[in-house]
Image 1 (tube, rainbow, N blue to C red):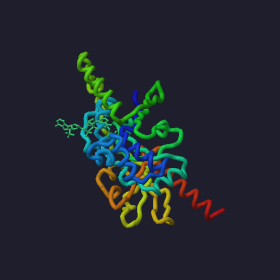
Image 2: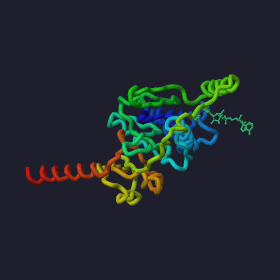
Image 3: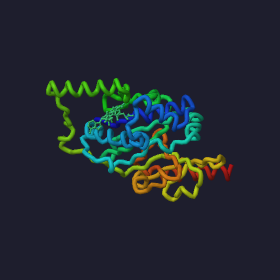
Image 4: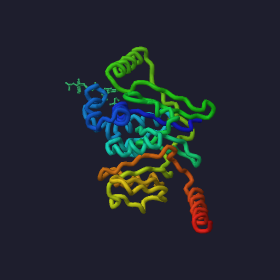
Length: 280
Ligand SMILES: NC(=O)C1=CN([C@@H]2O[C@H](COP(=O)(O)OP(=O)(O)OC[C@H]3O[C@@H](n4cnc5c(N)ncnc54)[C@H](OP(=O)(O)O)[C@@H]3O)[C@@H](O)[C@H]2O)C=CC1
Ligand SMILES: N[C@@H](CC=O)C(=O)O
């Protein structure tokens, strides 16, 4: 019944992205502010590089789909490589950049899950989530879309969560993971392809052969970028997309389940384009 969950689960990274894009602060300045306000962990790389969101996502996966997994099984990165030029691209497209944790039930079975920066459209509820706030969008069979929103970091919300845990203990409340006992347990499924945007300074750092296809190239500016389709498994087994200042951001509707159908469509479009250019 639960088709998908998409969420912003780290307040510090969301705060930094908001300050960078809405107030033009530099990354370091925004991080310092997040630390001063008590949002960031003592070791802020846990927030910035996506570890905190990843750890939270493994707990979500257990609640949402009854999947017991470990963080090393899930594709992730943080916002450490997001560049000012990426923000400009987002602005030009009328979109925002968010660190989004997501899980989606696939047609062929299993659940795809990952934590990556993503371009979000203006009508996506996650684009309204600013500063240290968190948000979760759930899509399910009959209830359609539901959106949960609230503060994700800061002394008062954290203290309130701790107090509510203590009172839950006092009253003998217990967490239940009912979906763990489902007769056909869900499994993680990495057999999908992702639409990604990659920005970089030198094309020699980008193994273009790793892509199924590339849809767009922008090579004029100092910082170049491309949009293309790549296997999730390829991203899991390589690190070029996290190195040399390369920034990878998911496109708004990133998951492609059936690559063969898409490839055929792509070929058909290329052929039509060829006819248009050469015959008309
Ligand atoms: N800040 C936030 O917005 C949120 C924080 N959290 C979580 O809440 C927890 C606390 O966060 P936060 O207050 O920001 O963290 P801080 O790093 O500011 O504070 C941690 C506190 O724990 C104490 N401490 C650390 N280790 C021990 C130990 N072994 N025994 C006794 N005391 C210890 C530290 O003492 P000392 O200073 O002496 O080292 C310090 O006072 C963390 O796990 C964090 O992930 C969760 C949600 C939001
Ligand atoms: N550092 C975390 C706070 C607690 O989980 C965050 O920024 O969201």
